[in-house]
Image (tube, rainbow, N blue to C red; front, side, top):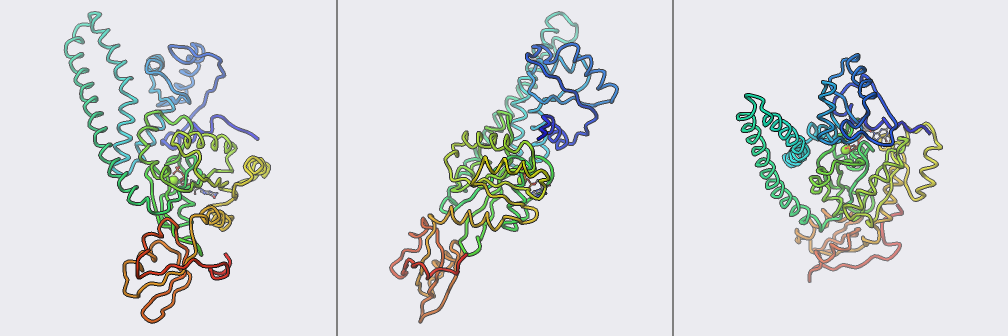
Length: 410
Ligand SMILES: Nc1nc2c(ncn2[C@@H]2O[C@H](COP(=O)(O)OP(=O)(O)OP(=O)(O)O)[C@@H](O)[C@H]2O)c(=O)[nH]1
Ligand SMILES: [Mg+2]
C-alpha cells in the first residue's frame, strides 16, 4: 500500500488554484529555528524555484511568522505554509455572509502576528536611524494595526450576531430528527446527500467545496422523514482559528441524533482520515453520538485488499458508492435500524377538518395508509416518538400498531 505523504498538500495546493512545478522533500529530526530548513536545503530550494520560475513556495507544515519572513527574504519568493493554503481555499470557497465573516476573521487573526512581527522588525530598523522611515513608517504601521484590530473586533461582533441567529434556527428545528453527514474533505459527503435527497448540493473534485451547512428533508422510503445535513469537510491539523470560527458551521453535527461518517475508501490514507475526523468529533463533544461509518467510492477501489483492511478494522461499516448507488439501499436500512428505536408505528384517527394535525403528519411522518371513515381520516404511519405530544389532542386518537399491521416488509 503506497502512502505518498505529499498527496494531501498537493491536493490542497491544487484546490487553491496552484499549478505544481516541482517538489522537494527532506527528512529531518530537528528544525532550524530561523528558517525551518537548513542552509544547504535552502540553497537547493532557491535554485530549484528559480529554475522552474515558481511564483510561490508552499511548505507542508506551519511556519512561525519569523521563519516565513526569513525564508521569503532569503529566496525572494512568496512563501505560504499549510494553514495559509487552507485559509486561502476557504476564502475562495466561502459563499454565504456567515462563512465570509468567519474566513476573514481567521485570516486576519492568522496574519496579524506576522504583520506585528514585520512592524517590530521595521520599527527596529527605523530606530536604528534609517532616515525617512521612522516617522511616517511607524505612524502608517500603527494605523494599519489599529485598522486590523478594529476590523477583528467588528467581525467578532458580527459573528456572534450571526451565531445566535443560527442557534435559534437550529433550536427551532431541534424538534426535528436530524441526521448529519460528516467526514474528511472530498470524501463524497455532498454527492451522497444529493443521492439521498436530490438536494442539488454543490459537488466538486476539490477539497473543501462545501463551506456552509446545507440541510434538506430526507423522506426515507417506507420509514419516516428526517432532516439530513451536509457539513464542511474536516481535515487534520485544521488551522486553530478555523476550528473556532467554524464551530457554528458544525452546529448541525452537534445537534444531530445520528451521524453518517463518510470516508473515501479509495484513498490509501482513509484510516488516517477516519482518525482525524474522530478527533474533531471528540472536540465537538460528538464522540458518543450514534454514528454509521460509510466506506464510500467503492467503485474507485482497484486494490480490494485496501477495502478488506478497512472492513476488518470497522466491521460495522457500510460499503457504498455515492456515484453509482451501490450499497445505498443497505445504508438506508442501517439508518432505519439505528433510528427505529426513536420511531413508532401508529394509527392516528383525526377529524378530516383538523388541518393542523394533518399538515403536521404530512410534514413529519411517513404515511403508509390513509382512509376516510365518516368524518375522520385514519392514518397509519411511522412517527418520531418525540413528536407524539404534538398530535395528542382530545379529538385525536393514537393507537400503536401491532406487528403485522405495519407497512409491508422493507
Ligand atoms: N468515483 C467516485 N467518485 C465520487 C463518489 N462520491 C463522490 N465522488 C467524487 O468525489 C469528489 C468529491 O465529492 P463531494 O461530494 O464534493 O465531497 P465532499 O465530501 O462533499 O467534499 P467537501 O465538501 O469538499 O468536504 C467529486 O468529484 C465527486 O464526484 C463515489 O462514490 N465514487
Ligand atoms: Mg461537500
